[in-house]
Image 1 (cartoon, rainbow over the protein chains, first blue to last red):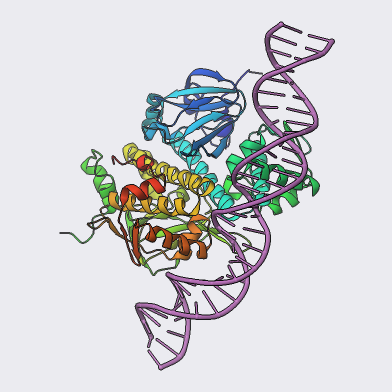
Image 2 (cartoon, each protein chain N blue to C red; image 1 turned 45 degrees about the horizontal axis):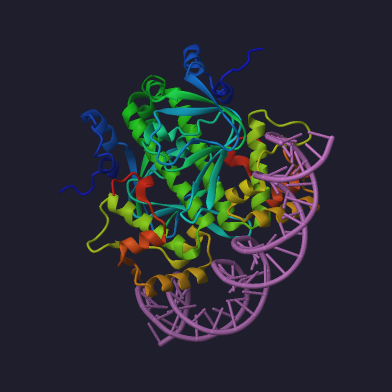
Amino acid sequence: MQTQSNPLLMKFKHLPLTAEEKTVLQGACFRTVHFGAREDIVRQGDKPKECNLLLEGVVCRYEETPEGKRQIMSFQFPGDIFDAQSFVLETMDHSIGTITPCKVGAISHQTMDEIVHHYPRLMKAIWKDTLLDAAVFRKWLVNIGRRDAYQRIAHLMCEVFIRLETVGLTRDDHTIDWPFTQAEIADALGLSLVHVNRTLQELRREKLIVLRNPTLTILDWEALKSAGQFAPNYLQVAA
Amino acid sequence: MQTQSNPLLMKFKHLPLTAEEKTVLQGACFRTVHFGAREDIVRQGDKPKECNLLLEGVVCRYEETPEGKRQIMSFQFPGDIFDAQSFVLETMDHSIGTITPCKVGAISHQTMDEIVHHYPRLMKAIWKDTLLDAAVFRKWLVNIGRRDAYQRIAHLMCEVFIRLETVGLTRDDHTIDWPFTQAEIADALGLSLVHVNRTLQELRREKLIVLRNPTLTILDWEALKSAGQFAPNYLQVAA
DNA sequence: CGCCATATTGATCGGGGTCAACGGCTGTGG
DNA sequence: CCACAGCCGTTGACCCCGATCAATATGGCG
């Protein structure tokens, strides 16, 4: 059993890739870097010279307003190239910070260029991945714009569960690692910390979940899904 | 003066394209369709067989919750391929509706495939475009998640102004077409119609804007920008 | 001229923000 | 081994932005 097969290969395992394409993916990262929890990997205003592939851990995109309010715009999991855009858009318009300790692989823009010019199928797969990210952004817009706190949290939990499931990071019995503090949930959902706390208690009281960091167990998947109006199709899973 | 040069050419005019590449873009649309105002072009659940390029008019992406609340996730302007994702993601996870009467060009998925496989620079330009869309989604998340009504509306107006400016659709004196009803602004910003109305009056009272549909004049650009905490860099303009 | 969509205004209410303490766990240094 | 610091979660009190309900203008159009 090898220590670390590139999680991109894992992600694209349903694609009929040639040996050559697989080799390109396998060798894409020229460097691996470790980060601690709650550190910035890329900052707003940076002009990165490479793209980053998340190998292990959880990161978030975020931005801060002049008043010091923070909005988290997405969570990213292993297998995500979380700043593919830096290849095409010179300057970062937001920051990337870790939630947990992370292992990150760097893919040079030159490698990306080779993929664009010589491996159209890989290109298309990566493009698809960025379009899936965009689909998640859109769902978050609906969630934050039109749902109340209870619904928002339920929706987020469903989404995280399904995304972890697709990369094989769920445990039996609808249990997942839940590395987020209540402050982070608040920043992701446009709520206040205090209100997140109270709403989590409500979800527990209703017997939908058991949350004891760093572990979340979904007791009643159907009820949680329905509370969050969650329809997983946007994540492109069969479910 | 030709009636209609493809607005994609306009959009990519800063790129050093070959004659061949220009020809591909010029001939990309195999059909042109007209729509009236407030009609659906694509519906959630559709499996489109082509991508659509907006030639004239304004459309929005939106989704409705089971309670009948509507969230608009973006506005799109001429030159936007507003469902590029349909090429890669089979099923639409949201709907596209017109705001004004529109002219829409269809690009077959087969043409898209040719571009992916034979015109990497065009591919990259289109990819960039979808990444810019994603950047706008993210800004909207910050706007809806962390700003109050006054700020949200100011930010939206700044964004629409700059986006129209980049495609040459502004008039002198900071004036633009403003085809949106107050209900649409509300749905885009996660607010209620009534509150949008009152906040618009506040913006007028403060002498930031003159809004008399279908025309918006920005009286004090700096003040509006600052009210909306607007930094246009995410739109990739020099400004 | 009447209809219908859109804009406006008033009154009331509630979800969730803010402020302020306090409790509990963990890691660290004396 | 204990004391203290710091982060995180919890709780209570109070209040306001913005939702909701309900009319009333206004204006374009057939």
